[in-house]
Length: 266
Image 1 (tube, rainbow, N blue to C red):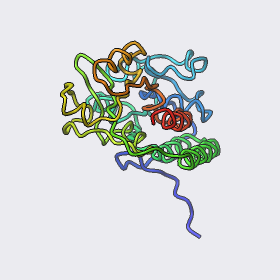
Image 2 (image 1 turned 90 degrees about the vertical axis):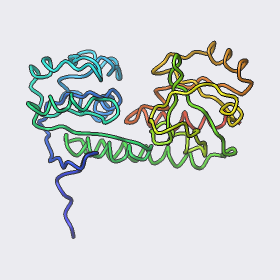
Image 3 (image 1 turned 60 degrees about the vertical axis):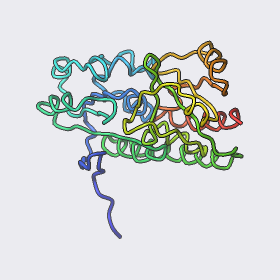
Image 4 (image 1 turned 90 degrees about the horizontal axis):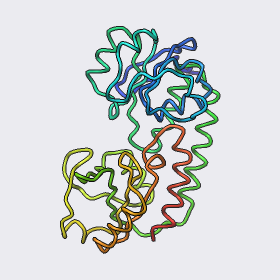
């Protein structure tokens, strides 16, 4: 019988050994939440100001700036053994500076809902919470099965908006687009950027079944949705940006939210 290896690879293929005594700085809000839910809050010595969940737990964990404007000096003083980063959310030059004094950089890059399974196992394996990670993965599999057992509507083309002035959306290579794909929905191809800018051309509008306005990072509201629907003449829905874009712990609720969204947009 082949024994289980004592490592798992991160998004860059770097293999990490178990480190139950780790001191962790996490620069990814959704993964900070996951680490806490896996029972690892006591190992977190630093987080970003955007790491706000679970609120009562993270309140006592020192902030080290934002996901992009990281305070390197604060992190150095915290003497972490590990820093958890994400390819989309954190800047490469920042990670390179951290590599000068943080022994281990755990790089993440979930692109599909099912990537959450590896993410949870990776965090659990490295930091000594394998049982909690296994329970989380079982709960995820149940939610995923429930989503795909629910009645599905027709295939749709939807434009998911994350910003205005300028208007910005998501490409098919993003986590959000993969979430939408679980419903059989596709996003329009608007170029090679992961988060392309666009204008409201008639050709674009004519090819849409619906527009989704996200509550983050831009704080779209129902008023925005109502005004845009009148302007475009196509259905416009306000969607919870955390549920659609936060991997990690929030993915469980995200799958339930996605199931409800599919029933709403018919």
